[in-house]
Image 1: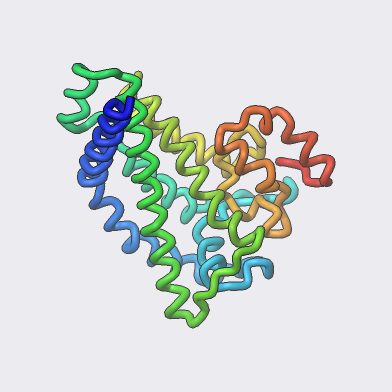
Image 2: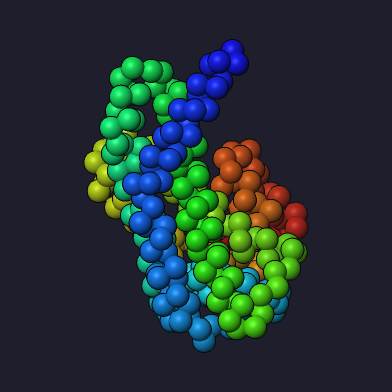
Length: 252
């Protein structure tokens, strides 16, 4: 059993290194993408609950769209859409695309191969967000406010975009198993764009639009519901409305 576990770990590490090396350029380019996006959103005023430069700049990147009533005109959140589209583009043809994965698929357990690929995908997304947040932290240093407060609002601002990207990446990778990568990419991007216009709790990509959350003071999405749903808790999805309503926090 120990040898089997060691073999799985070695396989996972090898696949992770291979996949990240093939997509490393996308991670390296992220700071060059984040900087101009932050500049575009420089005039956005984050809510008072995000009192440090780090969280304020995260809010600027992931504020998204929220219209509290129909009379508000729809303005596509270009920064939010572009950043999420780039992260989806980095997933590409995952889990396929390298020779060692094809060999493992033919000669070993497909379940073991897929679990290794899932670990590699999660590692890649974490590295992407490390690059994003490191850039945000550097900008906040330049601005003279680098402190990060570990409170409910700050942690939610950090975790919600990460969890949404993880969910989208796994869905995209699953679609790649049955359809061409271009269709998987289009499906994920379409879902994200739709979520900027349609307000529904079931469209989970809404949860990384921080302007729709309680953090902003305008939105009604509670991280208490959103994060468990994004982590795959179907029971929380079923009970989200009742949980939120008990706290006068309607998920929209």
